[in-house]
Length: 180
Image (cartoon, rainbow, N blue to C red; front, side, top):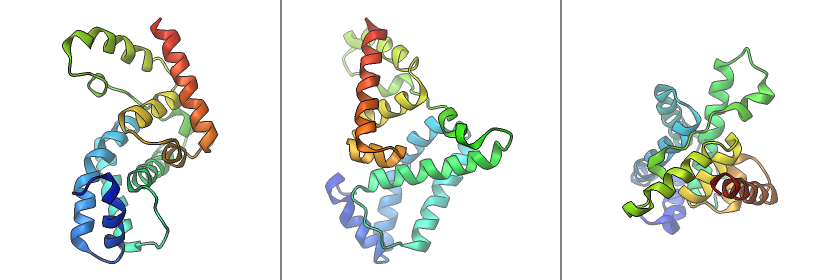
């Protein structure tokens, strides 16, 4: 699979009907999507079905919409698909509060640094991150662990660019206060 910069080339080949490019995109992004989706939805079967359904729909539609970041597009699509599935399942809850209640979890292995002397600091950071509200946990995960920029994050989370920046900076301030 090509590096991040070549994803658009593979995406365009897939849009032209190249099955090998589609297969490469699926194999490259399945682990990323699964990892992100498992933070939003604890039901592994629902998550796996949603990822497969996402790729089936992509292959069938091959929409002509321009994509600036394949990773951001796929993460946003999966997030939306999971939200719709959870909305169907949880009909007893008000729909407008369901997205805020999606439980986004950050696990210890995502922030462990290779050097053993930093383990204690990492545990402190993780404990602090898990004390953040769900949207702040999600933006910390997307920005730090996934390495996405604010435009990609705003697209995935359905918020504007400035709100994404503000939310991330607010999350960092909260983390500092929790760690100190």
